Picture 1 (tube, rainbow, N blue to C red):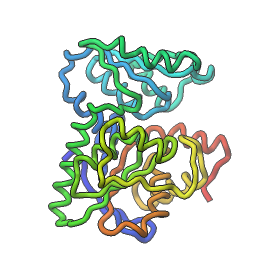
Picture 2: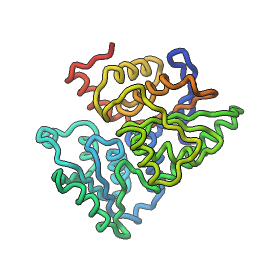
Picture 3: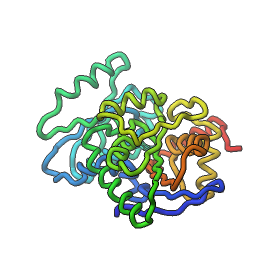
Picture 4: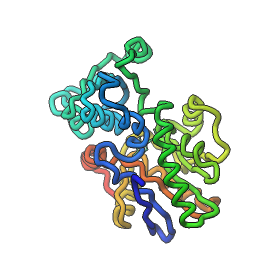
Length: 292
Ligand SMILES: *Cc1c(COP(=O)(O)O)cnc(C)c1O
């Protein structure tokens, strides 16, 4: 077992939480699982990993930590970043740069084309990882997470099990549902809406019938500060577990809005990402957004 399952009492309801956030501070949560097959790969196999996406991404930080451990170069493509960030990087970007990540900025109008062209850089020793680690390579590590959950379900004699975990690319929720046909997986989109998430997941294969996308009660923009996000983050923390400020608040709020239709044991898979809270909390303070 890479992580334990803990009982968690929150807002008058009983949950269990799979503490994947405690596996490793940098290679945390579902990023550890998604990068598991690379963690197991001998260092000699690759020289360079290439990826792309946002500059506060949790996936970016985890890949940087992995590459540093393996002695691999890490080239990360992004859209142009603000001058003040260049001079004084913050949060995940600062950590990743310290870990040796090479940041390559590409103009907005050339970005799509440049990303599509990265394939040509792939070779026996250079691996291209899709944004957010949304790669079939992730399946092996998620299968291990699924096996740990199945063992726990059996040990606890649970006939019905509902698993909750938030989605970015949907890779984690998709492979969890695929690997655990005896359980039901609930998720919600953080990037775009559920229709877009479903489309992203379809790139991985047919959508499993035991996977449900819960509809949030209102629209939220990705990685923006919202008072109710800070609110539930603080409440969760008071109840005993710290979660990330981007994915988890929307998942918990959506779960409470839709929970009346879900019967049986609830297991929340903690997806990690706590290091990103540093910059999010600064943004909340900067915007004057406080919890109520
Ligand atoms: C990356 C991330 C997710 C989303 O995972 P996907 O597999 O891309 O859906 C959820 N929560 C946290 C904290 C993350 O860092």
